[in-house]
Image (cartoon, rainbow, N blue to C red; front, side, top):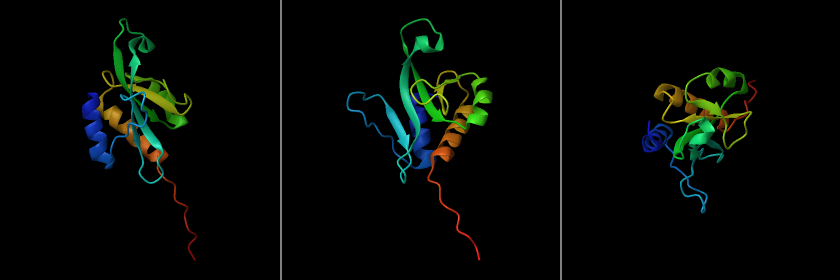
Length: 125
């Protein structure tokens, strides 16, 4: 999936708009919940060397939050790496030109659910 296809998918699937909050870094795109403003994904380019690739080209990646219990199993999949920019305990970096679309969508769903607003359960009588 390309970066533009990814933006279209996220905006359509979750009904949100991309956010480019950094004046200095126009190519960084954030996806966040409308109600609590928490990020669930960050679209960013990373140097190819981070992924052990030769060359100087940048690679489009998506940072997503992941449950720490599931993280190690996802890291075994192609295109999934330890977080580049975010907290390495709770976030993963997904290389868009390597990861399978279904795995990408699954990880976005997990991140979306982990970061959504938590509502307190009311006690029933």
